[in-house]
Length: 327
Ligand SMILES: Nc1ncnc2c1ncn2[C@@H]1O[C@H](COP(=O)(O)OP(=O)(O)OP(=O)(O)O)[C@@H](O)[C@H]1O
Ligand SMILES: [Mg+2]
Figure: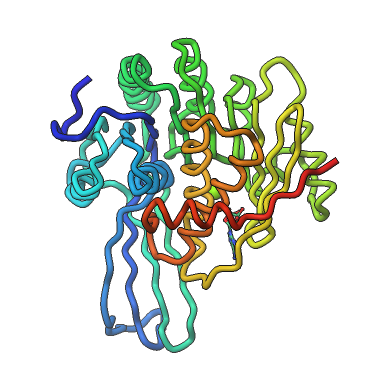
C-alpha cells in the first residue's frame, strides 16, 4: 500500500493517531490573566501519542507508518516530521485544523499552564466513515506488518468502542495490537483482547476502581487483567519515577528506572511503548523487554519531544536497567 510520501521505506509497525495534536509552547515572563501579556517566544512541536511512538521507533531504526486523521489546514509540520524520520504517511485528511494544545510557560514562576483542546467533534456518520477508512488501511497494512499500536485519547464524538473495533479487525487479519489508552476506550478495547496493554498507575487504578497506593495493589490489579480467554500476553504498568511492572501469565518483573537528568517527562510512556514494540520485533523475553523498554523511556527523559539518542546509546542504557523477578 503506497504512503502519501512515496520514499518512506516499507513499515515494520503501524501506529494509529485518532486524535493527534500540535503543541504550541508560549513563554511569557510573569503571566497575568485578563490583561495584555507580551510573550517572549513560541515553539511549535508535533504531538499526539501515536506520532510520538512512531518517532521514537524511527530513531531506533525501526520503520514505522502512521495512520489516523490529520486536519488539512495545519498538516505541514506533521508531514515534515514524517519526511524527516522516514515515517510512512497513511493518514486520512479532514477539513479544518488538527487540534492545538497551548502551553503557557511562565518563565519567572517556573509554572506551566496547559490549555488542551478536545479535538475535532465528529458526527456519528463522520466517525463511522473515518473508522471505516482506517480499518481498510490497517487491513491492507497488516498484510505486511504484524504490530499495530493504538494509543492516545479519542476525539469527541468517536464511539468509545473505536479501539475495540480496530483491535478486533486487526487481530482477525493476523495482526497484533498494543493498546495504550485510558477510561472507557481502554475498558471497551480490553474485551477485544489486545496482545499488550500499557496503562500507567492512574489509568489502571481508574480501570479497576481502586486507588492502588501500594506496589502489591498495583501487581494484583495488573495480574487481574491476565485472567480470561481475551487476556493480553503482556500487561505493562508504568509507574513514573518508580519504574514499571511487566507481567505475563508465567512471569512478573519490576524494572527499576534509570536515574537520568530529567529534561521532560512528557511522552516517557510513549517511548516505553516504542521500546516494547522494538522488544517484540527482536523476540525478547519479558525481562529483556523490560530492560529495553525502560531504556527507551530513560533515553527520552533527556530530551524535549519524542526523540531518542542513537540506538547504541539506548542499548547501553538497557544493559544498566535493574530487573527484579517478583514472586
Ligand atoms: N522521573 C522519572 N525518573 C526516571 N524514570 C522515569 C521518570 N518518569 C518516567 N520514567 C520512566 O518512564 C516510564 C514511563 O513513564 P510514566 O509512567 O510516566 O508513563 P505515562 O504516564 O504513560 O507517560 P505519558 O503518557 O505522558 O507518555 C516509567 O516506567 C519509567 O521507566
Ligand atoms: Mg501514557
